[in-house]
Every structure is written in C-alpha cells, then in structure tokens.
Length: 569
Image (cartoon, rainbow, N blue to C red; front, side, top):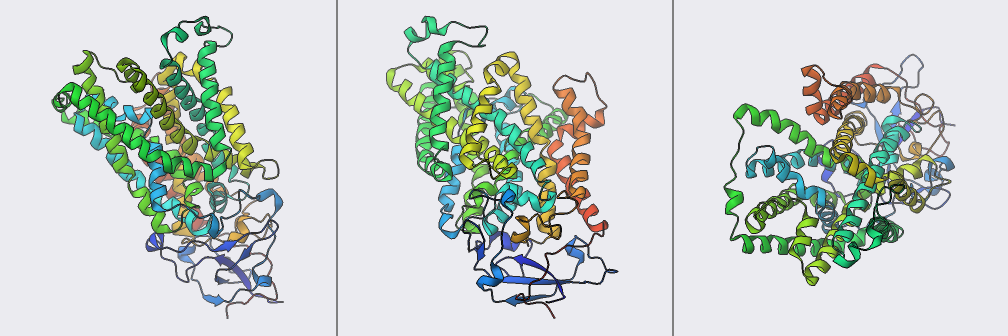
C-alpha cells in the first residue's frame, strides 16, 4: 500500500493556465457508464505533505505542486459514484453528447435575447431621461461586463462536462451546493410563470374579436382571471412542455432553428416601422434630459439592473457549455451577446419611437402593437413570432437551472424531465396573472433585485475555480460522500463559502427592502450599495472567500490510496 497522500486531479492539461486555458480546445474526453466512471484522459497526481504537523492550505496558489504523468488503466480510473450524488443527468457529458458548435451557442443566445422583456430595456432608460444612444450604450456595456463571468464560468462546463450543481460542489461542498442551486432555481420558477403568462397573453390579445368578447372572457374572482385567458396560458404552458420533454437535445434544436426565424421577423418589424414612420428621425431627435451628475447617478443603477437581467445565466451557463464541442465554440458562441442585446434593444427603441409618428401615441408593448397593426397575416406572424421568442427565452433561461437543481437535490427521485415538469407546475402555482395585475413593478423589481443578490455565488465559484484550484477539479471527489473527499469539507458544507455568501448578501438587503417598499428610508450608503449590488456582492464575497480559504489552514483530505496508483517521488 502506498503511504503517500495523493490528490488526483482529472484534467487534460499538464500545466493549465489561469486565463489561456479558458480558450483552449480540449473537452474532458470521458465515458461514464451507468454504475461507474471510466476516464480515458491523463491524470496528474499532486503530492501533498503527509506529516500531521504540516497541514496543507486549500488556497492552492500558495501551495507548491509536484506532478507526474500517469498512464491510466481501467483498474486505475474506475470508481463508484455515490448514488445520492449522480444519475444520467448529472454525470459528465460524453464526447458524443458534445454537439453544440459555436453557431448553436450563438443561436442559443439569440433565442434568449429576442423576447418581450428585452424589447423594453433601452426604451425604459430613454423614458428616464437618457438619449437614445445612451440607453443602447448602457445595455451593451452591461453585457460586455457580464460576458466575462459568462465565459469564465462556462469553462469548467466544457472542460469537465459538468453542470452548474456539480460545479458548485467544489466551492460550497457536496451538500452545501444545494443552497446556491436552489436559490438560482427559485428565481427561475418565478420567471417561468411570468414568461408563460406573457406568451399566453399574446395568444389572447391576437385572437379574433368575437372570441375575446364571448362569455369565456368574463373575469372569475375565484380564478383571478378569465377562463379564456387561463386557457391561453395553459395552451402556451403545454406547448413549452412538449419541447422541454425532449431534453437538452430538443432545446438545442429549438434554439438552432428558431434563431434565423426570429432574426427575419425582427427585421421585418424594423423595416415596417422605418417605412411607415418615414425614417427614424423622431428617435434620433431624442436628446438627453439629464445633467451630467443626473446621468451618472442613473447610469450605474441602470448598469447593475441590466447586468442582473442575465446574472442568473452567468451562474448556470455550465448547464449549456457542458454540451459545447470545445472551449473555442463556447467562447465564440457567447461573444456575440453584447451585439445581440444592442441590436435587439435598438429595434425595440426604434419601433416604439416610430409608433408616436405612425399612431400619434407611444405603444411600448410589442404585443399591443401587433394587435394594432391588424390583418390576418400579421396576426399569424405575430402569434408565431412572440410565441417563439417567449418559448426560446423561457425554456433556456428558466427551465434548465431549476430542473438541474432538483436533480441535484435528489438524483434518485428526479430526472431532468421530472425536474422540468415540477418547474412548470410551480410556474402555475406562482399564479403570475395575480402577481402581474397586483403590482407589475413589484414583481419585476423583486425578481431583478433577487438576481442581483446572486452575485456573491458567482464571485465565490470563480475565485474557487481559478485562484484557489487553478482550474483543476477532482471529478471523482465531486461525486463522493467520503469524509476524505476534497469537497466534503465540514459535513459536506464549506463554511468559508457559506460565510462569504451571507456577508456578501447582507449589505444589499436594506436597499432591496427599501426598493420593494418594506422599508421607508435607509442610509445613503446602503442605497449606493444596492444600486451597485451585483458589483459589490460579486467582488466582496469573492474576495472574502479567497481570504478565508487561504487563512483557514485546513488540511486537504484525499481518498485512501490504492496500490495500483502511481505517486510522486
């Protein structure tokens, strides 16, 4: 029996780089059968001091590493995953499952971007006093910033083929990972119900007039809406479910083939507005109504709000990049996000401004606008376009993360399909028609504010993966409940990550409560923190976690050595 203490890191590079490895094409080439994992990649054995008086630190940037290359064998690589930590949906993806090219990753983002909420973004900033170009620049700047954590967090998904819940185990602990994944899932369920209601509302508004004026349109107090509106909601709910039921492959095909259709329909809407309004002169004439100081006081909260718009995706992007063919594909595919967001918000702003010239009043809702245009062909295209835009956004953004969180919570009871079904049912339980009608601004403020509170999770995960572990993960220990596992920490919870998460969130809460009306007033400092919530919580929690990890001095734990394993000399 070898007496050396070994920590096995399964990774394809002998000397991975902190930054450059994020763009190197080398997916984790493993095949995982039902009951065991068989790796065909090379392994690096990292030697640690085994003397009890010399505890190792978890912060690997301060820990020298001696490595050797080992030639794996079936006996060497084979290990059993704990059944409570894995099933077919949680196992790392195999090479055959990695079918997302850069074009399909880009199509995914086009499908996410083109939707009713994105349509309003730049226009809402213009309403607050910005010039048209300032509103678009703010949206683009926010997405350029967000692109950094998106690509960085997507790296482990492509490299190791693991989803967000499995990645969270490395920083929060095997059991502690439930906390960030369920936080992400909750906001996803809320958004799923609201987006589904928007899709059903589009169907309702575009129905023939005689149907909307029938007795089925009468409001029922016990239901909170009319039977016809509820039927449209359920119809849209079922349409989404048929796609979700096909799993990630169905989502991939939906996003791939929807993207060009959405681009064509969006272009047609923009051309119609340009022709009918005689150009975009009215929009171009909208200058800023803000002084320099007023602009900057509005800019940073608006920047944070726009970052929060996709902050949830910045967390669970490994759920998608684990299917990417290579790092190059995931990086190039995501790099178009600022362009897509800038282009679509320009369309939303240009069309909205044109309605002032065409109809004599501003029509900010694309659903109401398409209903105002009228005509059978327009109605068909409108139902197709809005339904497609809502489905592509809703499924990718609000189903995948909650479904995977539920699978991670209980792999023996949940599959991706079952998790997606429960997410859809919870979307109904939220009764979005009541929430939106009681206080639409409250719901959107609450959900976007809640997204900003997820900043600490992203900061902790990135610090752990890049600065502490230097992109090296032990795949075996991510699926192990052994007390000797690297990610078991204290009973399965990483107390340093928990403390950093709580401390990162606490200063944001007063501003959040004031924003939703729970508190009447707060000190100005808390207002500033909330207006920059994502930045503050992301960096403060990440920095605190890094310091705690480096200062705790806890001893690294490894699984018992095997006589077949090579060791560093």
